[in-house]
Image (tube, rainbow, N blue to C red; front, side, top):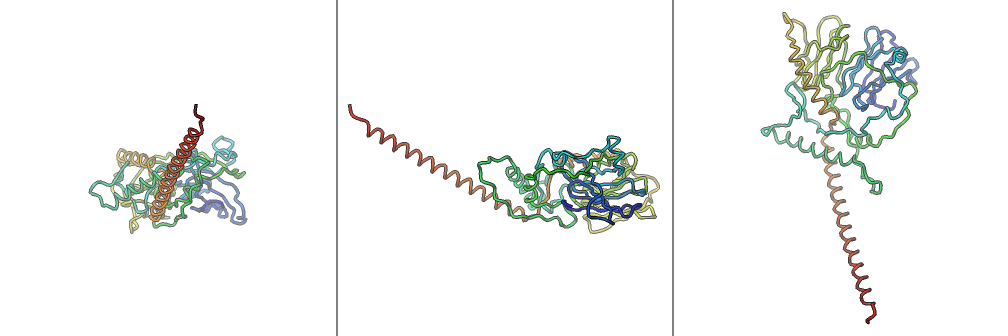
Length: 373
């Protein structure tokens, strides 16, 4: 397994079959009786072909379909009958190395400091910035994040091959942050930009989802669940602090409830009763039962939730959370780059001055050596 394992599910019918989700959008299927090599692999389709982490997997009751929650993407319901999917043109074997990598090799829009949860919760909105009355630390986090992003874009911009290579930063990769945060080190980002193409495995297939479930937002945490509720519904959490429920067959949103002040990560239905448990960044677990005399779900209000989430997902899809220590390293690197640039400027001035002096000396010597008439 070349990529980090991020989700595992066991087939409820063929219990020897394991589905293993990875951080590069692939799902590998193993027979645990002979687990040396995968039986086959599926590549989930993503926006601009950017590799995304699989945050959760669940088989349906018949073991024929698999529900995959993909970071920064829609939830996908996959039909595992790969041969029939290939015959119907709903699947494609990946043979070109270019199909494994994104169009933009380094799709970073913005960096975010760990601890900045301003874009989460029911009150979050697109292009949100802390107001003037916000704490100084909040404003500082936004300003330093913008500064870091500008510097990173310069780091990954095309370079003149004649220039010396940039000094690497010390690795700060930390993927075990509290709450399953989407933490990544600067070294990972720079390494991604330099990734070389490799040949796809022989058994790698891209599947078209049977149904996609959209309207939620899954970009801030890496442990967000999606699961079946009975055979009729699909449920998942969201960065907007709500739990979403869709009709399994149509993908239509049928309910959405406020379940956390920031992010809902875990959603688990009771195995026998019509009861749902949710949890997230808050320090509590909420248990839900359908006790209201009639539904309070408003499709128009829910559409507003979905529109805001879609806008914010487009805004933050390629935003990466980094630990605070990265700020120190980036500031050091920026200072080092500034010093090197200043030194090069001085050297150019000195060389220019020396060259002018030599040219003047040669001109004077030539003038002195001319014969008098």
